[in-house]
Length: 287
Image (cartoon, rainbow, N blue to C red; front, top):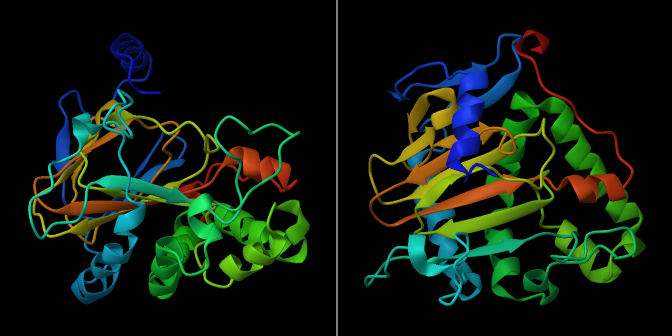
């Protein structure tokens, strides 16, 4: 999961990074392996100021009731250790995650049904309001995925076409169809992470070959996204989009100031439940 130093040191010996000392980049690029397999795409400033500030950043205010942290937890994703305190006039710290159809935590085997996320059950709830404000922006993120990993884009799109035709696969069929009308990203799930320093980690629920997309928002300057196993870091300012094979590439993010990350991702077990083709690595020669 990227959190064990001894394991990471062994991996670095077996798979040496590009640079022995981490080097920072601030211009667009893609990192590949020796076979041309894309591991991460770096797209600084691709979200223009008007959209990221007037639309995407402002839209997060309606989601604040769903942003949660657990003050008694030691788990880094939800515990208070890595969350910034909340001065006046800043976005509430916390995380909100939701999806039209996925497994409840700890109930991800064949005997359990797919469920509409609790945050989306209420038609006029904060998550639903946020999705309505994000329809065009999330579709644009889907457009980026269609370029950086076309097969994954098609797989995500096919998943929602299938669910729309077979809503009884999910616990709340009617609500599912309503959510799908405003769920414009071709990803199974989305997380909004507000005012958190993110320690080095990998994301274990996606497919090995699949890209997650991270969107940086806020009013801060000179954030950093570090990919230590590759020996690179990226300047991670508002408006930056990074597509990353998050199950393979360990990564960490740090920013000073009011900020949020919108993370779009797939769930391998959801994909498998729907019986869809498993997308493979994308190679640059395939462009």
